Amino acid sequence: MVLHYGKPLTVLMTELEEELGHYHWLQLTFTTTLSAKEASGKLKMLATMQPGQLIETATGPRTVAAVDSRDGYKFTLEDGSWVMMRPSGTEPKIRVYAETREGPDATRTLADAGQALALQAMGLDGHG
Image 1 (cartoon, rainbow, N blue to C red):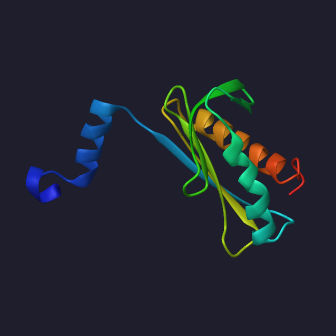
Image 2: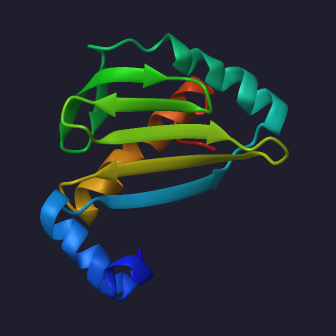
């Protein structure tokens, strides 16, 4: 693209964000008291989430629009934001990813809600 348009990547990214808007992305990784296998097994209950269900966040409930459990548990929300939780295959760790267009604080709030949801699914309720 740099060669084709004759512009530096930073300029191309700025132009793209001006046209489409900016996305804010965050990854959290936390360790659990469960083995990787145990955590993975317990997180499977997240696959039962359905569109229309709510994810509680510090700023209020968010409505799930779509659920994807192909590579972890990804919940797309009505506004296009999303949060995903996936266990490590080898370590007692869970990775949480979140993306919003609202800003870094909203993205952090959504990631924190994803971590709380994962802890709840594993029966750790904030003690992981």
